[in-house]
Amino acid sequence: MRFWEGKRPLIFGHRGASMHAPENTLSAFHLALEMGADGIELDITPSADGAPMVIHDPNLERTTNGTGDVRQLSAAEIQRYDAGVKHGAKFAGERVPTLKEVFEAFGNRTRYNLDMKTFYPEDRPIVRTVLALIEEYRLMPNVIISSFSLDTLRWFREESRQIRLGMLISRYTPHMLLEDGRRWGVRHEALHPEHTLVDAEAIRRARQQRKKMVVWTVNDAERKRELAQLGVDAIITDDPVR
Image (cartoon, rainbow, N blue to C red; front, side, top):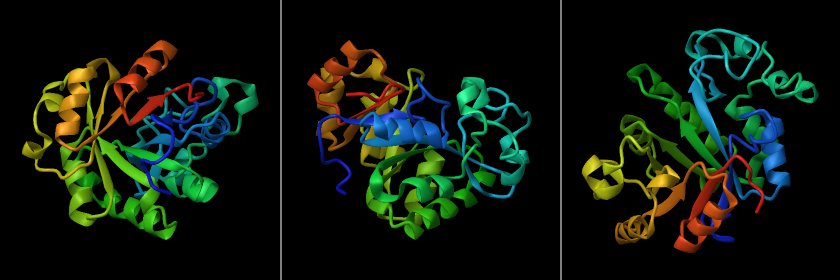
């Protein structure tokens, strides 16, 4: 698989098909692919015992029937809780998956955008764990790492010259879209801005910098069409139907 090849723009299911299934679960990822997504976007937070857990929040309360800080619980403790039942009885029994379980389930059938929720110096060991899993499943061509944390992106680049990196940019950091990314000291190939920041001028600047443009999170069909016409490379959406 060539990561950027295919229909333009590529469509990534945001935490899977999270409009229709519990986010960041195997059910949501299966559904995204059934709906025709080119890839899945998922969040990685380290557990107390160093497992890459597929969960967005730093705690369990919003998405599971459990409580507690992900970083203070082991993978086994986290997986005791139900990550599906809040989305409906038919999803009861879903667990917070590990990255290994996601790779085991989907292999090279899809692309992966791994959004790293790693912000602290003590999070750094998870970088080698994630890279080891990517190598174990031979998925380097299928993966891009994204993060709001420049430290995280630097950690990945220090460990691997091959891994794709995308710099997440929010409405609170629009200056990062306006400036040449080289000043941030991280060699990356993609910009991942919130879609409200993207217009024709933003696309032009990205192309000048030879950067791919991956936008999030776009659920309005008209806005998807507008961004496709502008020439973005990928759209991350809760509703990954084309």
